[in-house]
Length: 224
Image 1 (cartoon, rainbow, N blue to C red):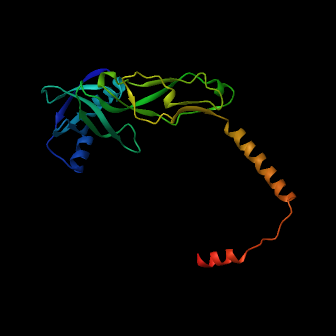
Image 2: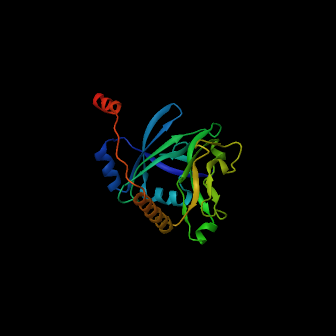
Image 3: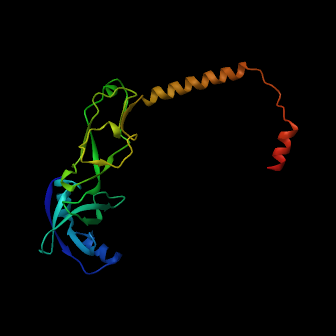
């Protein structure tokens, strides 16, 4: 995982009104916590932080300078965005780390290539957009690249199929599907319609039999 520098400022006021005022002024309220130290309330310049994210992404070791003081080693724990205006940063959580201690962090999954099945009309699906890894910070990858070019219709890649370093522990279950190529939706609908038609014809061909209800069934239903 790469490292980057980020300057932030401490803040003394709290509450929703103060947070709204900060956002109007072009700042992002945030907190820093972890490693049995006090939680610090901080704020970031929104424009600079957006540029930082565009350059490094969210998976980066940050040397954070708070008000020009000594840098702390942190990573991004969570970024909250406005549910409507996604570019609007609402809040950020940072957590202190040690380069000598393992961390657990989500890492985005990036699919590479065009599957054979897609060229034949199949649909590429990616149900797992990120994976959770546990390892030393410097061993944590920025992203996990998955080559899907050999996938045919009906093929799938599972978490257990990926070749990661032995020093990286994958938290996700090995059976989870990372990517798969399914049949075209139109073809599936046509097959379903054909199946329904066959079922109807079979039902019409079969003679109806009178329903027989035993005394035991009546008693059971009465007890229910």
